[in-house]
Image (cartoon, rainbow, N blue to C red; front, side, top):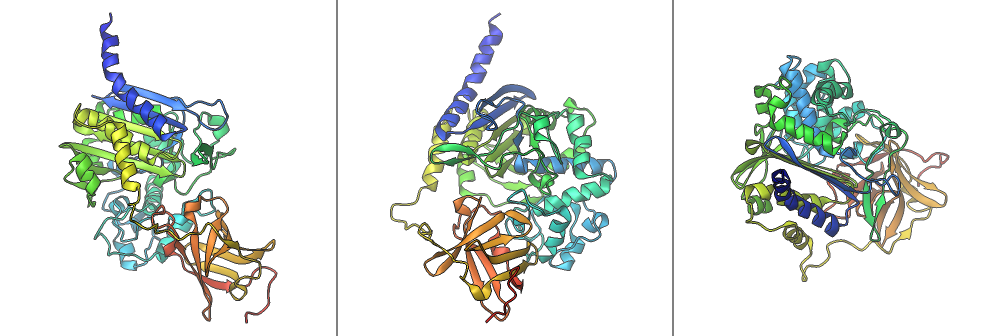
Amino acid sequence: MFAPLLLFALAAPPFDAMFERTMQREQLPGIAMGVVDDGKVVYRRAEGSRGDTPDARIDADTLFKIASNSKAMTAALLARLVEQGKLRWDDPVRRHLPSFTMFDPWVGEQMQVRDLLIHNSGLGLGAGDLMLWPEPNHFTRADIIAGLAHLKPVTSFRSGYAYDNLMYVVAGEVAAAAGGKPYDQLMREQVFIPLGLSRCQVGAWSPPAVGNIAQPHVRREGRNVVIAADGVTSPDSPSMAAGGIRCSLNDMLRWMQVLLDPSQVPGWLGSEQRRQLWTLQMPMPLGERQRRWDNAHFAGYGYGWRLSDLDGQWKVAHTGTLSGMYSSLALLPDRKVGVVLLINGEGEDARTALMQAALKHYTAPGGTQGVDGWLDELAQARAPSPTEADPLPDTRTTVPAPATALAALQGRYRDPWLGEASLCPQQGRLRFSVDKSPRLQADVVQAGPRWVLRWDTLEPAAQAWLQPNDTPVPTLDLRAIDPDIDFSYDYQDLHFTRIGDCPGNQRRRR
């Protein structure tokens, strides 16, 4: 009668110790972790604070933002439509979206559905992401697709890999056009309902009605603080197909089981389309850390998945990152093993180290370091050398720009893809604001001879240089101050041109 208890005791402690050490050392507000082995759930744990009320606790049904782990679900939806004969992977995108185009019209003509999923468009890393984030904003999917025509490529089409979110927005609209229904409806009908992902949310929905939702957190003055908390309605976000789905730990465990074992839901997706999803479509650079940590020999991107090898075993994985929310999912398909992590705080190192420790439990049992070892390596790699000068300019001592600053350059501006913005006086200060992005509002401050945008609600690391150019037609450029800024702040792709005066200010420029 004690044999089942003994087996559980032998299986659970390695994951419990990893879980507890990560939670403690990284001071996370909350985390949910699940493990599937041989197609069965062998570990499930959720701890910490949701953040919506002081006593609200995370459990296995708590919803988390899975961020870019949404991409695999979008790819699965397209695979279902391919299997149903409603589209083909090699269909030109224009067959489904006739108005689709790129900066180079030839690329727009040649781009196929498969290209939307594998990050080979030729655009730079994260190009156009400021139309998606920070949320909420007023960009529509039509705005985003139209904006692609103004984003200049940095490489030729299909010549290399650069992670891109906007193409997944297009992919979602291709699915809607081919399926004859909105993306969110198709996702529910084709993925959530048949697989039993009963808590997953997509499209517009009501957080108060759904309940049990983890809120994103950041670390401030040694505390986890909620940011961008849910309101009465979660809107139909344009970023849904790229990173806008929310699911619970139980949902993600079920998702892994179905992916690892087709017999879980017979007939949901045939072997050919499953193979397509996990076939390497675009080679990816293999980093030094991945070679050393994983003993890896290859890396590439499939349809919504990263593919590589780990200690001689096939690995299929992805991560998801939004401000204050981190997710990670990894599969070892040949062993029917899967691990998923959901974190509602600043958990980049936590997800990396905990996932590594959990997978090594299967690929190198007893032969590798624990969570602390992986966390120590990440911290050491991030620490500057004692002889290395701080590369960041000091913008801590700044002077607010008065309303009269840059008088000859004040006015209304337009960027070809981000739209209209203002550099105008407001309540005695000079302000910069983007019309369609309410969180891209900033005070203009002066740091020595240079101008800085100090955003009202974004983290300090997101500050940008404002570079005005007093040419016959004035222009504004933005540049990141921190070279390691999140790539979604693609300030370098912006170029604003003056189109008029500030409201109520019709005086002539000098």
